[in-house]
Image (cartoon, rainbow, N blue to C red; front, side, top):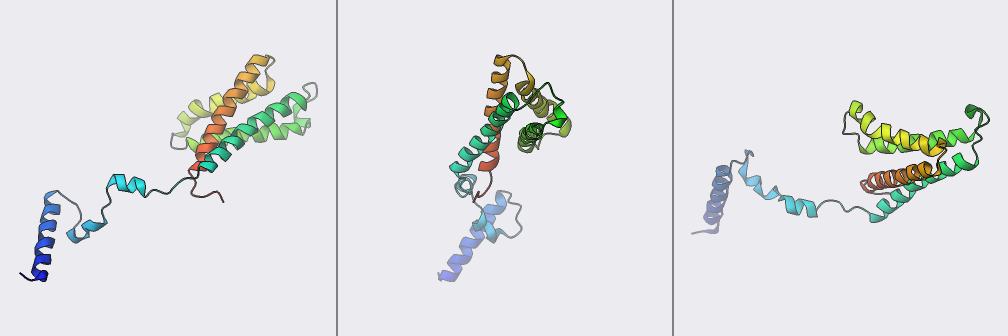
Length: 162
């Protein structure tokens, strides 16, 4: 038997076995491009662990700075809209909300408002305006953990930071 007929037999054999499995490909000679899921996971792009760490530090630092501004620079006896520090607090609030909103963007907006934005808003403004020290510190701790984790995940999913 010549090598050409052996090759043809092999191609017929693989094409019939592929068709018996119910492969939807019309051209059965393209079976060599199939990659099993385990190997596909190995070929996935590598993520940078430093991106996770940097995101967690940035995400945790924003609520801490907002807490510091609220406790030391905000004067509650004056109208709030006349104080420049309120711009920093509003920016921190938008950062916290946008982080939660970006990570949970697959949830419909009506559920996202009640699941993500509501608790984050409550924690953030109770951290800023609460009289009780314990409530402020618990809200601060929760915000540091949540925004640090979400920002770390968000930055770690990117292909490259640099």
